[in-house]
Image (cartoon, rainbow, N blue to C red; front, side, top):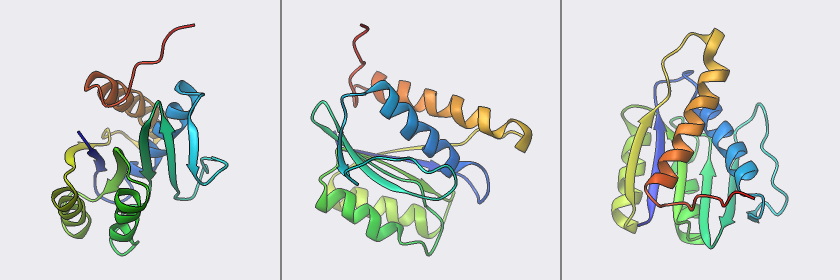
Length: 153
């Protein structure tokens, strides 16, 4: 089933950081991934990004920017329509424009939705919490059989 996984929370709560860590973990766990957009994948440490990769025939699109007024609608349409992503990972706020955009894209294009929040921690522990949440999200995608579990070598 095509799925949109949205990491949601209010502003400044680690959504982009969690998605950034998830992208890094995906690339590390699936070294045989095929880059689709851009052709050279680099996860920036401090700016928002959009990438598309293919893992064992499964198209995964990731967009880290999900604040109101940042073009989330256009980016999700690109991932769904132009790149035919099986899994879309994005950030949204907890209510309002960005949540409605995800719901509208999911409904009109036949995607299931999963909403999850970031962990609520102090800024002291945010980086570690984002890394842990990213690991949990990868486990979720694998447990739901949306992504394969890599074979141990």
